[in-house]
Image (cartoon, rainbow over all chains, first blue to last red; front, side, top):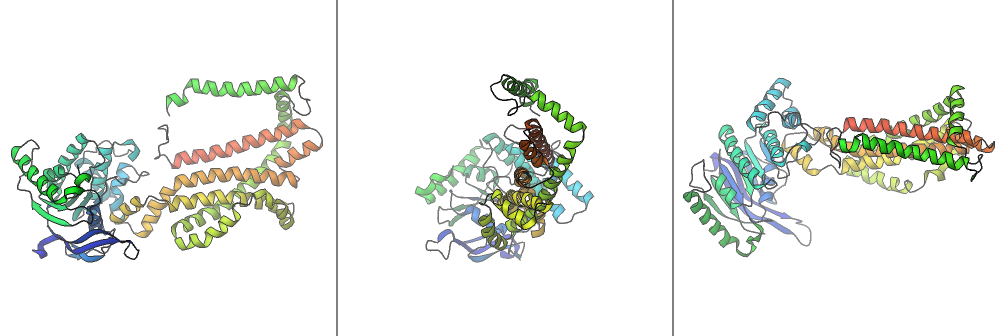
Length: 261
Length: 260
């Protein structure tokens, strides 16, 4: 089982300010195995360490204990095989849409023609046609997040890590972005690890839902979602699963659940 | 450009404001409330200005002043920008440089003028020293802040996209420091003119500051006024050049009013 998993989180914990007088445990010892090509959502209330977990997989934060392997290789720092999409987009404001998407390939020395072809491909896939020469300030939140996703995919990562990517956009845009990411996932066949505080979002997107309790964070359930794609939010089967998942979550998270929506 | 900001009513108001100011000056100067030697009317200043221009006398002073500003400002930028970038990027360099900078920065540059004359005499060196010294601090401090306060998220984004440390520095940190650098350059230019005129007023035989001081000694206030106006025009022109440069380099940035 472990050998075929794309992402292996092996007894990982994170404590901030270890040497200070008041160390803060952000994440208790956690073990996870995520299969290749899976869409996995991590759900938890604010401050449960779910972003910390994601950033550790990205290599931006070092675990206090334990280790992480992606595609069989130990994570020691950030790398292009693990693409990260931030909630606040993180677009380079001085680069156009084209420049942002080309950033990764450009840094890795991809030749100009190949780079242009990549930009072309992901502009088309994310519906950004006609906006190639715009600067980020000229785009709406939803468009910005499309650029961020296109930029990450243009690097052809093994896994796509998404940190509450649709948390900053309005509800309608969020639903259309959710459909977009499912479509991209089908086309690109990436493994996706997606952090959200919304059970509804997780139930709509995921193959598997990983649930975390509030601080200090702890994984208490890894629930498979027994529904086929495409899903419909009004479908009785969907609603029944969502209801059960939400119930399980609320029961465990209990008092500290006020942080989730 | 936003039409509400740049349309004809705005231009009209701008021109009217200048005309009103000049007209009031003319009226006050001619009314006899102030002696015409103390405050010559703008028409007289304009005539004197034309005389100084057509006799080429003004150009000598303008070139001296402009040359000093450009050399001093250039030297200051050539040192302050690289030093600011390095101190913003390497914390150890910051800690080495910061106490010295903060020790010297509060000293008003004019306090150094007597020393500068003692050290460097009344030739070009003392003027260029003053201009360089004055322009250095705003350029340095702003460059450093621009580099140091690069959005850490953008650095993280770049590193997850596979950028090396060098690429992060060149493509993210330097780019995001540009707006601050632009502010620093414009402030530095202002300080440069301040130091220049002070140096020229005290000990000089050429330059607009000298022209102003010299006219005072002979009660030729109109010539002094021409010198003052020339400094205004010169300073305005230099600032506009920097603004152009800034607009060109920061086309990606949106200001408060939605214009780039």
